[in-house]
Length: 312
Image (cartoon, rainbow, N blue to C red; front, side):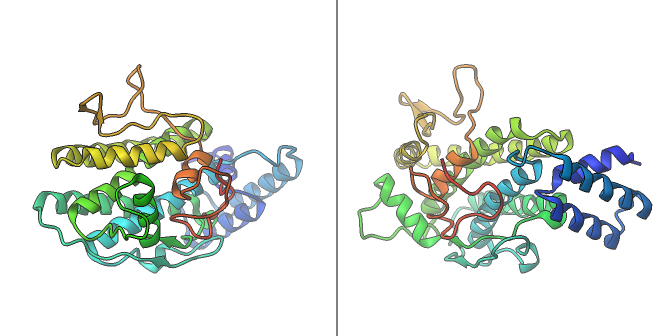
């Protein structure tokens, strides 16, 4: 179905280093992918090893590194929504991989009162679960493990920074629907900008198409959350969160609240009607909750796994 050159390129791009390629080939043979025969896999392994030896650009960011960066973010979103809807996190089978696997601190079911909000949350939870499963499948043996995730303390820190609560108070993101929606607002906008910023870095068209598909879903999620926040009169709190994100974003002030100039702002876009993007470093500034260069903090107490793990 696929040629040898295509498979070789696919494996090269899905792996962060030669060890990943070897693990991918071993997994492919064991699971019987049906794409190529054993002889072709062996030939591809030799080609990949040769290419990696001859390469002089050891600092290039591979597609695998970018997808793993996205997987770290999807772990966070999937855990957040899974706990909100079901009262438990991802199955352990979807959390193992390269790097240090960590626990999830915090998380509980939201006492939903609105049927529509529960349905929205349930649908988003399913999408995020599927994103994790899809990225892990695409990465194969190169997929990173779920890093340690902190929900309770990180949301309190974010709410304090936004001025939603006073220092010393606690923000329970699962206490009610309003808190849940404000918490979701933090994630969804960041997810959209992360995929938008990563898209130009992806060279494999298959992966680029997949990333575009996930970006579209995340944009639907973000618009849904922003609309509900506006309808429930939570624009002021959401705008405070946007301002806090902007303060972590670095020198570029491009975050937008749920209202702009007193009008609804469901789609944060530039003058050309285009969504803006963030670099991986800028994304990590927000999820680490620090405007400074760091390797951990906030929602990831010990950082994310993979090559891209330092904030800007």
